[in-house]
Length: 263
Image (cartoon, one colour):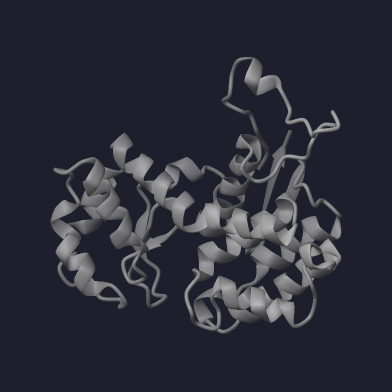
């Protein structure tokens, strides 16, 4: 499939590119609107087999990975606390929303794969809520707060460019940033035993390969994530091509399916 990526920004600000102090055009990072859109599409290709990430607000199912229900644009899970935080945020913004009544059940099932108190109507009510712009905004907010912003901030701290920031983002989306051995922070620690990031004098490409090696190890620790194609035939492809700024056009495969984003 081929997707033309178009920025929705308008006006003079949309035409301007950031300038460094010496007047040279500065490289953008993953927070740039067009780059962030690419990131959302890349994650959606792996999580939902589609580049249409905005169609995923209503997505919900139990994929039998021990995390209960997985749902929404980033795979919020009833068993991993982030779904509870999402519905809590939604309720702050819209106190009478259709999912509010499930908060006690979400607290009770947090940390398990149980559906107790959620079935039989939770999936139907989630899809109804997904028609509400406030719920969409809540998903966007929690995605950025819990996953996107921490990944980009760590990437900037490590001195990696847009591709590296995306590699971090995809890792934290799948693995979270807890204390377990396969969490984002511990994937990074594992990589540090093999290489150094640019901020510590290391080579950026060497560092990112070491990080991806550690990521692959983490994925193989869990059967549900043991297919490493989102690394092998996507992120590693961009890295081997030297595309550290994640520039279009992009072509990759996930689970054998081909995708592309053309400028």
